[in-house]
Figure 1: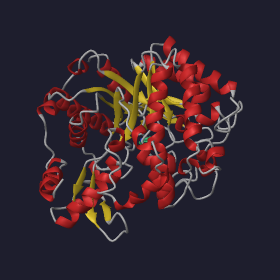
Figure 2: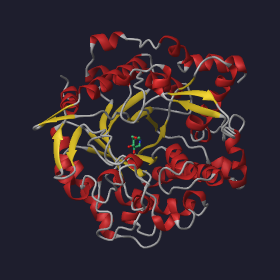
Figure 3: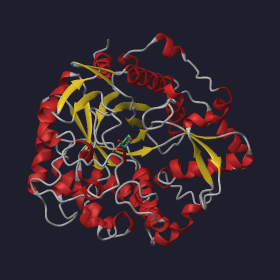
Length: 478
Ligand code: IFM
């Protein structure tokens, strides 16, 4: 891509929006829309992850994960909290799944805690852990809530991290053993599978920036982890395909449109590097293009970890790619070595306080449309499912009611953009809200609440928020 192409791409990604900060109001947003507008086959659901909701961190034979270790160290989590108990989903799954049923939610995406079924990561199987997921799956099916399972959502067994974790090649064999075990065990009932959750997030936050478990700060470990995670992602797809009859095989990628702060060539170049970092390290190899080393000096050393035969194994044709979108990133050039770019915080480019979530993320619904169009233009991507989208805003608890009008507006605005893309022919086949209920938001602790259902962490009481009632009505076709 030459510079002119890149300027055009930057414009497509939304650079023009910065000038005016005008939020385009589409006819959909003004006229409203219904579930049926998305078609009868569109998959609607909610998403969660094992470590964020289950609790029961050390019961019934579960081994420790890197998140257990990390949260138990002082100073790692903003609030000093951990997810030892979290939402106690380990015990409350029957009533929580019943709540999903009551809300008319047809699909529930959740993950399996690797160290619950293989406490050491490989080797000895913990039958009690397998039995637990049997019960969750059976209860879901009994209540008409279809299970969508993510194989790995960040909680690596500590025993594997002790051997080098994602930065060491031994992870390939360990991951295959784990993926093989759970797909054989649950594949008779679970048909919808995702291999990894947001590999860019867990490799960069965990091995480069050190703000997530396992807390490493090393370019070398990050680059190695990227290659090993990419290999596992593709191999995981092949394992699901081999073990699960009629499987719907996917994986999930976090993505953000990248907007240069202005049209200065140095900022446009910075945006190109950040785009390669955030959006392409995992996407490009998956579609047979190899790693974007040309555009991203940071990962040029990746060749050191690529063994003969690896490159041919990186691509896999998934039935769907899970898009996980929250916000865009505005970028300017900086002196930071290798990436020479910085993210500009939303209030620095004129975004109103009201349009910034508790995570500090700009509310930017147009971004989901941009990304759906971008993914749809890639011939190797057969179908896209939005496997996560949602927001954290302060909720107002009043007795049994929880008022969260901003979340309702957020969901409506983002969904309007999904529908716009669908109407233009994008093959988007589903939408999952992050999250079903408030939960442990990693390094942020329990403070940012993403749920449709409010959790009182003292009593474990659930209250359906106004947004949950809105989603339930929407799903009922109201
Ligand atoms: O909570 C996370 C989730 O685990 C992965 N995707 C983003 C969410 C919100 O930060």
